[in-house]
Length: 471
Image (cartoon, rainbow, N blue to C red; front, top):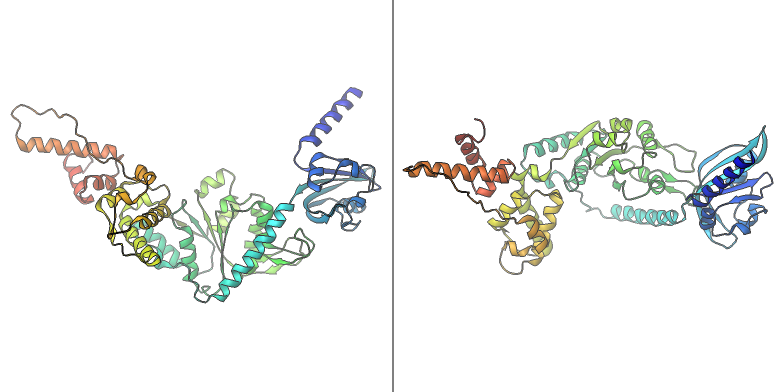
């Protein structure tokens, strides 16, 4: 038994020494029994400052009513996920997220144990972000000429793209939640803003929050707000739900939201009320929610990134944005649109891109989608100093190596029969050229047509003529 006791002691000491969370244990009189390395670092004290002493002596900003350790001890109850801001005896301000548990035996209080996470730096960051958001919201309210994207900014003639625009226009007539799925750079926020601009909420706030930009503890406060006495100290702050009341709240990359925060979001969506962190009051809200995801929702659910019940609540209306490589016919339209856009900003007079550039752009796969195309046009227009045409040399060496590939079609030897006529040789040669080009383009007809510089319909006719594809 003694041997086992020594083993348990070694295990406990090893755990306390190596875990990232702070651990603080007091006895029934409030005197410190355990104070690990992580807690020393978190609170800026040494265990010698606390061992055998009343823990309140080390924290003049706390008393028996405000201390989570004393609350668990005196009230014999667990205190879970409680934010606490306090001063240590050196005058340093600390913010922690605590889970505290009473230690009892046969209903007798023996002490309390607290596990703490450091939120001091997050709290400071939260304060800065909250102030910035407030200033931005005030500026937006002052600027009556503030313009969000609308459906005129959605450029394209691809049938799948046009169908999604129709879905978005219909969605703007109602208040149901919308889930937009599209890879990075496909224009998810442009769609979201267009829905808002086209709706009856157009004169109310539109607020966007990227869920991947902030850690869970900080995002929760930003979304739901904080009440006096919670980790933000003595300042009450409304969250984004309150700030967007009457308007639209865009939750970008919802699949990046911590899974533990998603039930709280679901509750707000179902009940139409929000409760600030540290608050007791339910605040009614009227907010249109649009969410986006940059991975397939089914995949996000399977990987545990998105709760199934939240997905069903968000996806009342679904919009799926096609990749730019799947809407090649839109590339010339987008090129023209971005040239006109940057002409106005840069006070230039660029007319179009060269034929070589357009062909290369149509053949390129565009992993960054529309955003990548827009960036390339902007970069090239910074380089053009004379003339009205964007040419290959106006792009960086990096872009040239990615986009401008060798599109020459190399014809292998063809075995011609003796005395074969010219017409038959032309037939075999053209067939070989098309077969090689289709192989190089992985069977993509639009890309192959661009490479051969013929119309897509013409290529389709020849593919059937030579039996390369079935009629």
